[in-house]
Image 1 (cartoon, rainbow, N blue to C red):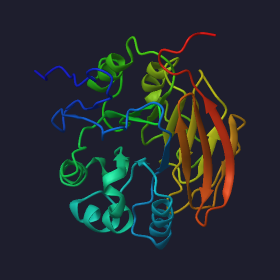
Image 2: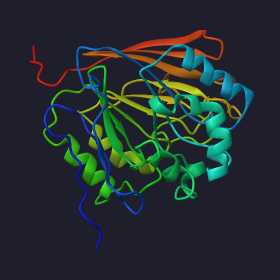
Image 3: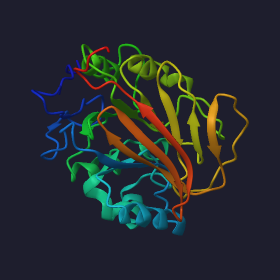
Length: 291
């Protein structure tokens, strides 16, 4: 029998909490000192589909590095298939210099080779759990896994429900690889609806990659979804989608966020630094009154 997953935070600090599923051992890691302080704003970048060894991917990573962010959320896909060699070359050459501040989720490209690539690499950095949580800028950040089981009764969804049970406020951001909604080549991923449903009323932001473009959707169920899969690999075409508030294809770029208590300010920036879209998402901090 599989063991029951736990790993919830103790006290005020947010723990990096994982659940083994059929893969990595469950582990708890304390965030760096001060990471959970709600009064400290944080600059966080999010990007996926860029660890392919390309000049564009590397240039975008250097642009992110020059901004001296507090964290980088990598939205998945190490090319071509996430082997140990792919991590040693295509990942390390592009994002390796940012390893200490990267918080990853696994993509479909590296999932089949996760036991020889993704898990061994990130285990050396203390973050090999298939799902976990962190705290930045007054927001709880949930790294979820679109490639592992996530249906009703799955260990991942049980863990997520436990994390959210009784959780106050809505200053919560979740990220995983395959987007619930997308107007790119892959389109909507309806199978991740259980993750979305669990976050309803508890979170304000969901970020994904997988489709190689930039998208911001209009809020649904109180959640705004962003797709930031234009990290450097071959770019996709954008299809018309009336649900989208912003979309851009044919441009390498990433999502820059400034997280602070009660709000997130987000910008899609192109390679070269041009701001393509600005948006703001408000949230209710835990413990805040209803007025």
